[in-house]
Structures are given as structure tokens and as C-alpha cells.
Length: 355
Image 1 (tube, helix red, strand yellow):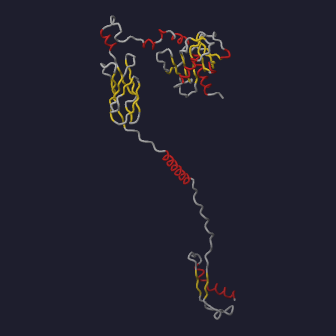
Image 2 (cartoon, rainbow, N blue to C red):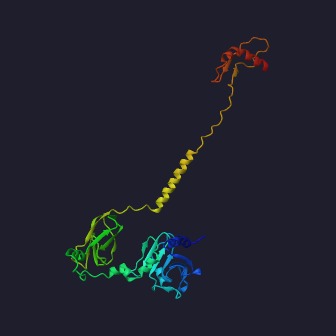
Image 3 (cartoon, rainbow, N blue to C red):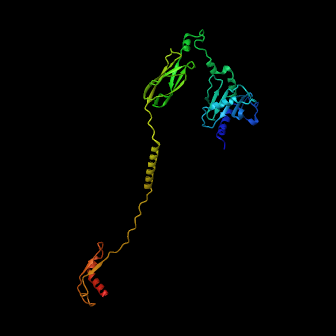
């Protein structure tokens, strides 16, 4: 199974080929095969390896470090800078250390031009062509270097400029902006300062919330407001007191409500589970099984004759008077009339049979 870096190289290889670079392995190196060659896993001093070593016209001009997709590229330029200084002596090089370095995941790519007065990595959409890198080696094509060497306003020639042009050049413009116009208490907001002359000045910032005034030469200053309200943040240029500076308004809202503690989520989850179990149990509950009704028992008829042995009939055909009582079950309705009519006969027959 390929490693994450190998998967990243599968995306990086076609990007290099699209920009005119010829990909080679170190076992089959041939720097004369093309003007621009990207050598995979090139050996360096100290048994290090560069994921890609870039050659133009047979001489090394830069490195490219591959990282897995999702890996942060912040700080990787230091590793690329180390590779640019540890090149083997067998390789020719345009500059020492190598002037250009890339760091890429196949999705995100950073580029560092070490010929800049203040080299910093920046995101790029694609790799540069080898002709572009070769052109940037010339001093007249280094825009940042030329900007850093611009004449001061008091050194610029004014013989061929109109008075309005001279005033526009000499007047400094400062712009202050914030990455959010509305924040909450405890949240950080970043203020950015820019000027029209491209130079770094010394600034003084007043955040308007009774916090200490900040004096800095940085162009990006973070700040955290501790009270709600409307604040006017202002900046002034210390090395040009005549400039009025700039300001921006920030609205600070109430702090965010604190999140629920972890045990609250546990209790709520358990309560929801118990409630769901009860609902499920009720939905799947079967109706109770009723026992079958008892079998039908015919009503009982009981005779209570009022005689004893002295008054019992002695002859089979003797006519006697019999007092009797008939006790019926409350549910007896059918045939009650026949029992009342034939009762004496039945009693007599029963008595004779018993005798």
C-alpha cells in the first residue's frame, strides 16, 4: 500500500510535467535530456534526500518537498532551505544556497524566492516553468529588490514631474483595516496596516478601549477586546507626524455563552436512551392473553322433602301428601313450569326408589 507521501507524489508528478519539467529517477539521471529536469529522491549531504531536485541547463536551481495531503506547510520551508544548502559537490548549481524552494501536497503549494530582500513563503497555484526561474536569476527581474531600492521622496528628481505628481508621490497614505467589523468579547481581531510607498514604518495604534497604546513596525497586529461597546481604532505614523493616519470602527458584542459541561451531555444522552426504550417497549407490547371462559355447567335443582321415616310412604301405590320445596338457580328460566307441575311425581318416585 503506498504511503501518504507517495500518494502526494502521484499528484505532483503531472503538475510538474504540465509546466515543462522532465521527471527522472536518480538511477537513470540524464541532465542533458531536457533543459528542465526534476530529479526524484536526489541524494544530498549527510545522507539526506530531497523529494525533487530541480535542474535547469544541467545545474541545480531549486528543491521541492512533498508532504501528505492535509499536512500543514507552515514551517516546512525551513526544511527546504536546509536541503538547498546541502547539495552534493557533483552537482552544478546556479546559486549557493539554491534560490528557489517549493513545498507541496499536490493540492496546496508554497513557493519561496530566496533572492527577495525578505524571503517569505507564499501560496501559488502551480509550479513555475524553468524559463521563468532562469529569468528571475537576473537582478533586473527581481521586483521586490527593485522596490526595496527605490529612492526616497526627497531624492526623487522633480524636473520632469508636474506639481500635482510631486505632491501625490510625497504624500504618504496609510490605510487601516480589520478582518472583522463586529466581534465578541474575548475574541481576537487582526488589524492590517498598509501604505502607498511600500515601505515599513513605525506605527502607533490606539484601540480605543483603555488598553495600552501599541507601538510597532509590524503590518498585522492582533488585539482582543475585553468589554462590549463601540471602539474607534486609530493608527498614526511616528516617522511622518504630518500624516493624520487612519481609523476604523469596531463593534464589540457580548461574550459567547459558555458551553455545557461534559457531564450534562452524558445525563441528557442517558435520559434520551431511557425515554426511547420506554416508547419502543410500549409500541411493541402485546395485549394480555385472556383465559378461556369456564365450561357451561347446567343449573342445579335441589329437592328438600319435608318428611321423616315415620311419615314416609310404606306402600308402592299409596297416595300421600308431600310437602316439598323447589330451589332453583337464579339463571333457571326454561322448564320451570314443568318442574312445578311434575314435582310431586318426581319426589315420590325418588323416595320409592330409595326405599
